[in-house]
Image 1: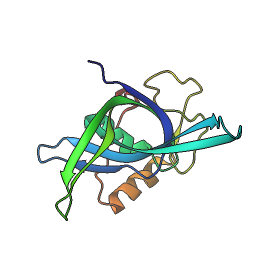
Image 2: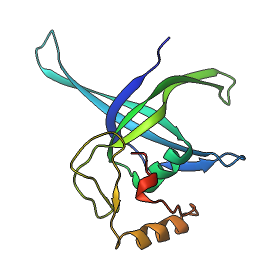
Image 3: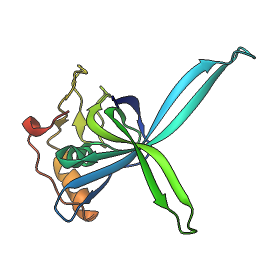
Length: 159
């Protein structure tokens, strides 16, 4: 069996980072993907947007939390999973989501608010380059939100 998903889209919300009792980082965010197609009956172009929940684990989750923000374009490689639960009224509920194995920045333009600059190449595991003047501001914002500050060398970043 083979379960592989590759998506390119924009984050619909900022990354939510949590930790398990054993210390494993879990990041969750939403991704919006668009598809344009031609209606076979009317001949007009239509657009379809899908909203997908993404989950990332471990060190990649911490890095995603540090560098990704709402609106950023990313490429996600992962696997499709079915989440099942019982809601408050006792109904069985389910939805599909993606567990990401690889997260790759897709933007080339520098962004003052995000604090990183993306190199011109789009090879897998591109490393964002931290702007020195932005780093203290990012750490201060993280501390204000009670999110632990993460000291990351550029060599440690897997994307």
